[in-house]
Image (cartoon, rainbow, N blue to C red; front, top):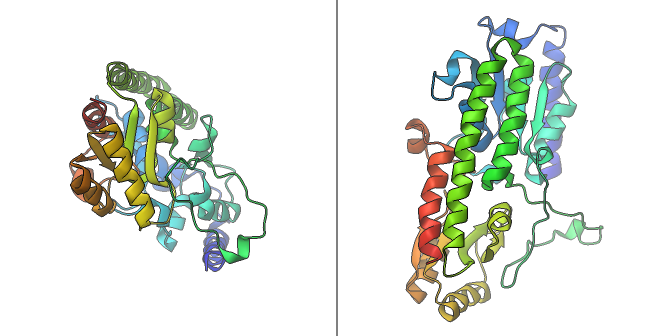
Amino acid sequence: MKRVFLLTISVIATLFFVSGCTQKKNNRVQSGNGKITITATIFPQYDFVRAVAGGSRQPFADKVNLSMLLPPASESHSFEPTPKDIITIQKSDIFIYVGGESDEWVNRILESMDTRNMTIIALMDTVDVVEEEIVEGMEEEAVAEDSANTEEEAAYDEHVWTSPQNAVRIVRSIADALCSADNANADFYRQNADDYIAQLDELDAEFQAVVNNAKRKTIVFGDRFPFRYFADRYGLSYFAAFPGCSTETEPSAGTVAFLIDKIKAEKIPVVFYIELGNERMAGTIAEETGAEKLLLHACHNISKKDFENGATYIDLMRQNVENLRRALQ
């Protein structure tokens, strides 16, 4: 089914490309307003662009036409683009995506387009990536029958933005792209990027201070674990039901029992869950252990209410600072 879906998307993308390939005008000219057209697949890069293109001095919309493909409150790992999304990508001056296995559909679409006048940023190309790991007690992804006899490729963790220091590198790449596409406003973008990076450095220092003053260095998730880069940055160990990009949602009784025993044995005060997910497992573990159930936001996506209220990566991560403090006390 996945192969059929990807083939269908490729055909659709080709049709849209053929229909528009005779017009080689720059997208900024086509838009008629002189603004850069930027498309981000998910929330983190969307928010980073907002910061660099607007900062605290003016709305980002004054300089760029920015869109996010993933609708608020949607699951990022199961996203399927519509024909309208494909047109949006094709009209972009700058297109930003994650670049991992969950973005296979992106590669098929880009292969079907003339991208010579498009700047493409894959977040995983901007940082040092690490492989997903299976820690004690964690359930591995089920292997499909048709791939059971093939050589297994390394699965790299896609959630590179969860480390504020990785976010710094991503923001610099975005700023470079904006400056190149709109050189007349390069100083504006550079200043905004510098201001935002200072906030990210401050955020990084806050997390480090929490860890430095903590009683413990272990966190537990009754959920998937998309925080590998975060844990590596601050020297945290962790236990979780599934790796970050797992499509599994229902854990085995053995996995739940392991996490319950781990919390009881180490007197861990908090069990985490991630945003927009199923909190049932974390709730069960909390009831059995007396641990507090708290959110650690991975910033994949945000709720419609948060999106409409202008919530930012910095806002969400500052909430994480406080919840991490409670988990490590």
